Structure formats: structure tokens, C-alpha cells
Length: 373
Image (cartoon, rainbow, N blue to C red; front, side, top):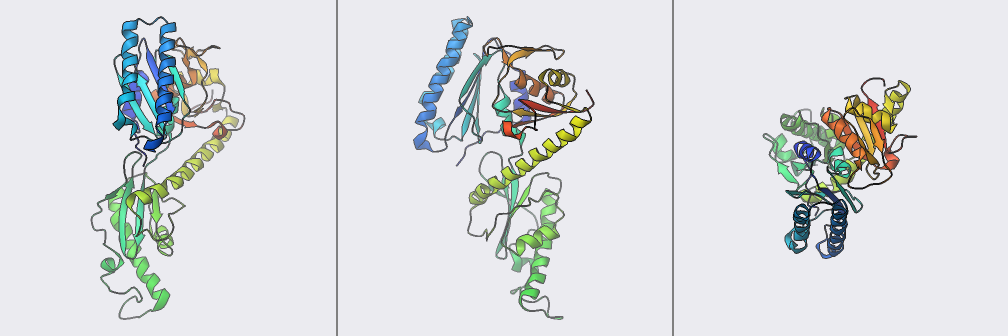
């Protein structure tokens, strides 16, 4: 099982606002399989050593360097910590404080030393909504399951939700519609099932109608199709968990929901690429680093797509003027990282994606602007 810590917007803001004479950021690949964590532990030792070497080279006083070294060394003896991991670990440490986040996405090993944290890879964890609802729907039972971005799935209490189809319809059979106008066989059963899904939908809407979470249906046909037809909830996922859900645990349903969520995310990125193409023709999109840096500094970026894997050394002044450098060291911070944080501070949206997800012709980043540049 994955043990996740998805940062809140408040936590992201605190990390983004951190300034220090020594801010160390480490990302490393981990594994949820306890028996295979030794590789990650060795990697962390190597990355920590690299960070300390950079701090020495920049001339940081040893009284400020030692607290960082000690905090990172403490991980080696923490068996409980290593027993509960996901696919990546993000570590943010200054001489005064250390924060970690366990992430579901796979991030290559890297270390950054600057006066601020390198946060772009962390943004991938918050780019997409990794939580959802799963409706486990069968004749013999129905329940709503919350699949959180971190932690275990759990059932949500839904007032007035029937126990099953027979409880909903107050009947012992689904093969006829009513004593009068009797309908038997499959036609009669489908009439009853339509009544059942309407009762389920009414109860659900009292709980989730104001939510924007995807609702993934776990049901066999015809119940899956009948519910999708009956419900007005606008965020029903087009793909479903097929087959009867009755023999599956909440966590099993959650695991089957994850690939469906990933497919929804891919569709969202595709929509943004199309929008970028439209806006580019209107002068309201750019992938030029200098132009986007200035636009981000002045609140002109509505949506920013950034390549999660690339780092461009340099700095940006308060007015958004970009200064690039050939060396990635403690005196430079990733300018794409800084652009992303300025977009967030100005109320824009940042989507951390892979290079292949960027619009055609864009390199490193792509910005959809609020007004023409």
C-alpha cells in the first residue's frame, strides 16, 4: 500500500516563501515494498553527502551546516519511517526545520541547494485531483467510498441510502414492476433497477452535489449504464470499474480507481494543449522563458504547464527580468520553479507535466495568458 503525504496549498505556500542561507531540497525514488528500501536509504546518504559538499563549497559556516547534516543523518536509524513509503520522497531542510512528503509519482534522484526550495517536482503531486468517489453498486448492496489523495479509502455515510435494491424497493423480487400492470422477466427487472438507481442517486446528491470530485461507478451492467443515465452529477467518470463490486474491499476498489483517475488527468492535459493552440493564435499564449517570466511576475498567467524534469539555472528579479546561468549551484535557483511559484501567488494554475505533454513547439514550459502580451 502507498503511504502518501499530499501537501496542502497552505503548506506549498509556506515552502515557497521559505528563504534561508541554506535551503536543501532532495528528491529520491522509494518503494512501498519494505524489503526493498535499502536502495533508497543508500541513495539518500549519497544525496545528503552531495548537499553537504555544496554547502561547504559555498562557504556556509559549519554551525549552520551541521544541523542540516544531523537532520538528514537521523533518517538512517528510523526503521518505522522507511517501512511506510510510496514511489518518491521529497525532503526540504534548512538548519532550523525539516519537512518530508511521500509521493505517488516517480521522481528521479536529485539534490538542490539554494536560498529557497526547489518545488517543481512537488507540484506534480498537486497538479491533479488524486481523490475521487467510488460508487459500489449492486443489487445486493450499495455504498459510497471516498478515495483520498493520501491515506486509505473509507466508506462515506450517506443518509437515506438504501441497504440494497430490495430494501430500496421494499420487495423480495426484482422481476416485476407492481401487482397491477405486471411485467416479468428482464423488462420487469430493468424497470425495478431504474427505480433503484434513482433512489440511490437522490440520496447521493444530498452528500456530493456541491463536490467536483470524479465519481467512478463500480458496477456490472445494466446497473452501471442505468445509473449513468439517471444521475445528473456532472463529474461521473466515463470509464467504470467493471464486474460486481460486492467481493472487493474498499482499498481494492480504490486501487482499480487510480488508473481511471490517471486517464482523466491525461484528458485534462490534452484539453489544455488544445486551448494553448487557440490562445497562441490570439497572442495570449507563450513558451518563451523571458516573456513568461515577466508575465508571471505581473499576474498575467492564467495557466502554466511546466516540464517536471527540467531545471534551468538562473534568477528572476522583482520586475520579472530573467538572468540565465550555465551553472546550477547554490547561487542559482531554477527559474522555471520560480516562474511557477509566481503564477501560484498571483492566483494562476500550475500543471506540472512530462515533456511530451507540453504543446507542440514548446520547450520547458507553456503559458496561457489572461490577456495578450
